[in-house]
Image (cartoon, rainbow over all chains, first blue to last red; front, side):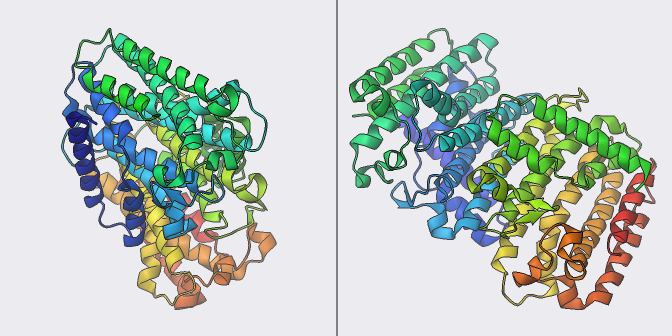
Length: 295
Length: 295
């Protein structure tokens, strides 16, 4: 973990706090539930991708901070809803009780709904830091983010994941699910950063290639961790995907092949950054960090 | 029900179909669940308010159609999530099984999530009909809508409503809940229509006054209907609010006083339209229609 990561993470945390401070009028228990999961020790990977992507196209990364925070709010909402009893039924997340275990199902559903809504408000509004992209950029980013996390993206991936629970699957179905569940939001993060940073269509294409590859690698490594780690190390129910009979990369192509595929994707992701004229060091470091998680 | 209502409703339905047709790539079962509740025979009151508000400020109402449809998608999502077992636990809505009774809890939660997301996509994107407001107007509308339906609006109202379930309440708490649960989205609908229609700040203030009053009347009348109608007439569990020991206007101020208050609010709502220079006939008719529901 390098210093730039730490700095970016602190900037995102500060922006998230400012966003919540500007909504202190909401019902206290709902707000508490929203903050509980938002500040539960996430890696802030997606917001870092937004900011680092603006840097990579030579843009002003400070302008992305509200968008970066909004992406993290959406990520948090997906975790809360995915953990619900009707979904993956997880009791632990990042070493602490899941939102519905702490606040009850109703409030957990509402906290997720409110975080998703707050994200779109943050993408549209001037934002608490005043780093305010022009309206035509905002509208483009909102469109991309909404497409990525909706029925054809994150939500659709979760639906198909649940439909295949306990059923025989193949690598094609697994990739269909992951492209949507994990990949879509990572892709949206790099696109949003690239657009706010003023990147060309070619720049955005390079960022999307990078994003798809690290997203793919991320999910393979998540699957690898799920079979190799004990519960206490991971902070969530180890083997819970296996318990639910989900398709995983190690189950379908074996552990060694999974690791090789992840390494290849990380390498290719870093190669995708070659055409970019800005500072790609942070994006490269994020890719390497994702690759190292598997050890 | 006048001819203008019928025409507006058909335009909204057509736009909703076009929006779904443009998302045919989403998982079929998820899409089916989203459409099931969207086309379950809603009155399309909120989208009609968007379009009629643009007319009332002398604007081009055709430009509001995608925004109007988006507001209906958000309304549909709130109904699906409110009906869930963890929330109001309703089995019937508009005479047919609620979304989770038909598709299961997981898909119902995801269908709601996807409808909310699709709404924001629709507010940001060019829209299937090409009636595309300029980006600075879109961003303003998205900000207003998101604030209205988030933690300080609709979602917050539902949270506090659930927190007070089975507890003694007073008229102040009841109005706190309804201002947020029902009023906020109606207010957003008229504001969005007024802004897209090119209304002045004074026009928007008149529309907001109208919106708050019909929203208030709407909820009082909903409470009245809940105690006076049989299950088959209403198409949802009659007395279900009472069964959950919720606060209602008839319970707190009596049936007669509730009716008088609703009539007064409808009258005042129509009076609020006086300063507007455009065609306010449809807004006035909507207010009267809401008032007549109580008989």
